[in-house]
Image (cartoon, rainbow, N blue to C red; front, side, top):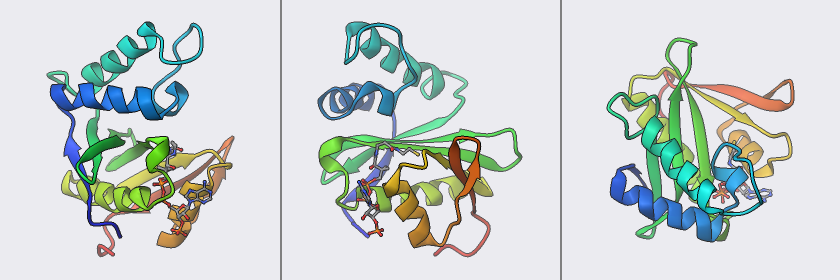
Length: 165
Ligand SMILES: CC(C)(COP(=O)(O)OP(=O)(O)OC[C@H]1O[C@@H](n2cnc3c(N)ncnc32)[C@H](O)[C@@H]1OP(=O)(O)O)[C@@H](O)C(=O)NCCC(=O)NCCS
């Protein structure tokens, strides 16, 4: 596993850096909910990206925990833990900038996010992905996690109570 990858709690300063990474290295649909208007990083979409994280993670009463993903000292993406109604479960959300994909960052992030989720007291981590997402399928297979079809998605609950691997 890569040892130069870390998760750092999002704050106002790193949010600016995260937006910069998203603009340079990702498409809006990969990193934020849909916003109407022309494609690309329009001013509206950039403002919505900042609002999204400020309202969800940096508010006085946050609804989820967001981390920046730092690889070799640079912010390259984001990882989120969103508590679900199912007791003890949190949903994982991860995106990594295009130029840092496929070189082991995601594998390291998964292990770090599992550790953070355990630390926060969650007992399972919910993963939901598009069936076309070969990288997530490979990450789950490597951990021995079976994804099951749920409507249009492939999903799994990863047990966090088992001994850390
Ligand atoms: C999905 C994502 C987080 C994976 O992170 P990553 O850094 O690219 O993944 P890694 O380099 O650690 O590779 C993980 C595994 O996927 C495989 N993989 C990576 N990219 C792949 C690709 N395009 N096609 C097939 N396999 C791929 C790797 O070979 C590795 O497999 P292994 O463990 O058997 O060696 C990242 O690609 C991403 O941010 N994608 C866009 C947003 C997204 O899809 N988020 C997840 C939504 S659920």
